[in-house]
Image (cartoon, rainbow, N blue to C red):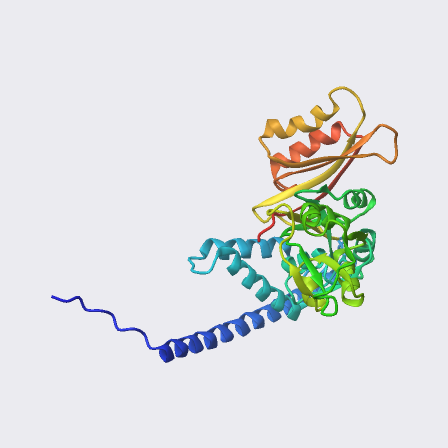
Length: 381
C-alpha cells in the first residue's frame, strides 16, 4: 500500500495568501495609528484641563505633557517577545514593533533626539534602535552638547555612550551627570561591528591613512597590525567624521559601521574587523522626567563618601543585606575635594520599590554627596 502524499502548494496560491495577509496587516497598522491619534487627543484634553485647574489657583502642582512613555514601550516589547511563537526570532519581532510604535508616536508628537554626531555614528544607530526611525535625530559635536540640548528643552531626549565591553566606561559621560539636572530614562545596547570603508575613488588604490575614533582604532588594533602595519592611523572626533573624510579624500579609509557606510556612500574593503567578536557598547537615554516602574528596571546613582576606613563597605552593605544585584560600580576623582572619590553605582530595581527606598536612605546617611540619576527600564532589544 502506497502512502498518500500531500500535493505541493501552488506558488500562485501562496502569493495570493501573502497578498491577503499583507492587506490585513495594512488595515491593522492604520487601525493602530488611529488609536495613537486618539491617545494624543485624550492626553491633550487632560493636559489642558489640568492647566486650567492649576491657573485657577486650586492646585500648586505643575504637570508636563508626556507622549513618550519609556516604561510603557518596554512593557509592550517584553510582551510581544514573550508571546512570540516563531518562526521569526524574538528580537526580530521586537524590532518590528519598535518601528510600529515609533511611527505611531510620530503621529502624536514628532520627537527630536540629540546624539553625539555627526551623522553615521554608533550613537545615532543606538538612537534609532531605541526610538525607531520616525524620530528626528539631531547631531551634536560633544557629549556636553547633547546634555545642553536636552536641558534647554530644544530636544526631548538625548543619547550618550556610557560603557564599552572592551574599553570600559566613558568618563566624560559620567562627569556630565554630576552637575546636570537630567535623568536617565532608558538604556540601549548596540553590538559594534566595525568595517574598513573607502570611497569609490579610493577603492583599488593605495590607502595612505586610516581614520577612526580612538576607541575604534583600539578595538581593531590587532587586525590593523596584521593587515595594514605601515599605514598611518589618525584618531578623529567620531567614526562618522572618519566616514565623511573617507568620502571626500582619496587615499583615506575609515573604520565605521553600517550606518556610516550607507549615509556616506562608502564601500566595505573589509567587514567585521573588530578584535573582540562580542564587542558591545551601552548607551543611556537622558531626559527631564522621572520614569515610572516597568517591572524590569535598573537604578543609577552617584555618591561620594569621605576617604576613611570602611567607607566603601558602608555604601555597598545595604545592597548585600537586601539581596539586590549590583550591575556596575565605577569611581571618578571628585572635582570638589582632593583625594575624595565619586562612585557611580548601578543596580537592579526601581527607586519606588520599598526595599530600594530603604537602600537609598541607608546610603544617603553615609554620603557627603548623593544623587539618584534615574530609574529606567532595562534594555529590551
